[in-house]
Length: 456
Image (cartoon, rainbow, N blue to C red; front, side, top):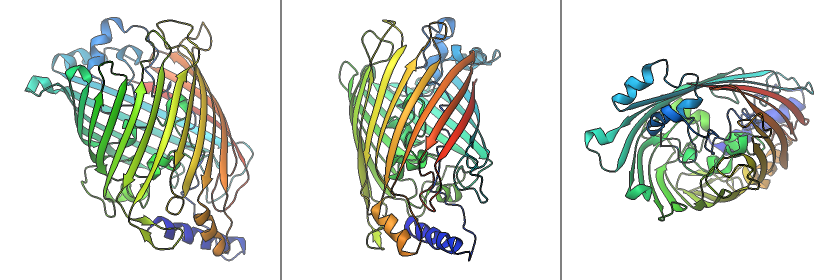
């Protein structure tokens, strides 16, 4: 089902329901962020550990296929030695990491409804698990600093329409680094959103108002739930600060994430009906967190997708999609000259043409503080604001069928990630959301969210 056809079908159902003729089906485009509470410390930042001591060698075998995600070091897992197994694996060139993330959220304003229309409208439970195995390919004679990564993930939820249930391969790729990291090649299957943008920076894993599928780079085709075949080249200057990263990949399905999962449930399929080649390029400047001086990450990116998409304006099909983003993350304060602690600001602006995209423009601003208390140097508090504009053409299509549709949606979120013990974080948060559903219109929501992250 094409996106435009789905929206029009939803509009007809909504209009019928409002007149008492029929019950609507859930609108899967209407999602309050399923993980608006950060599952871990800011995933795009190094985990704030000063030294990993005797376990530091294990970190050389952590996955390198997600450029904007720094994996949890061994010393911050439940068992740094993995109950004695990690040393044996490392001796043979293997690395292993895993995490479990259960979460819960509920709209305490009591807007329960059946069928449910957004995450948290009824009590919503979600559980996710992720595992990665790496191998040092230099042992087989591969050039550069070469690594093979295979990963899998799965999730289940009490709200299936908003959170797809699946178990899939997420990574099957090779990463090679040459010239002290100035040239990086990556090829295979992987989630492309993990190579660009910084979607979960500052703990806002769904930094746009309506959840991760509404993040414009994802809407434009960067794979999120299931991987896509891709090849990436990254070039950096001698300081490793200035960089340009470019990829060619198969697009995620323009028919939606559920279509991808239905037609590629294992993640191994090279093709998916309707998905064609896409091209991504990001130019930026990034300095390390924790190094002397305040960290900065500035980036600008463009996306061009050759997959045919629905044209909301004409009612036909457009033969391509495109868009772009600009983002800046800066460290404002640095109480420890060699630590990551301090206040950070992250801001993003995204654009996509509204004649072929439901989510047309958004603005996001997140302030987060690592180590808010001297006695809690590994905690993080985060305050995020986001606003998202819906396509005027999609909105008009709904109205033409007698339905109602929102013009925009805004969210304000406050969360706190507390380190319970090594390898375990508990996160609590609050989100006030206007327009939690694009169509049909629904009252504002106030969500209480909790999450637990356990790293192995």
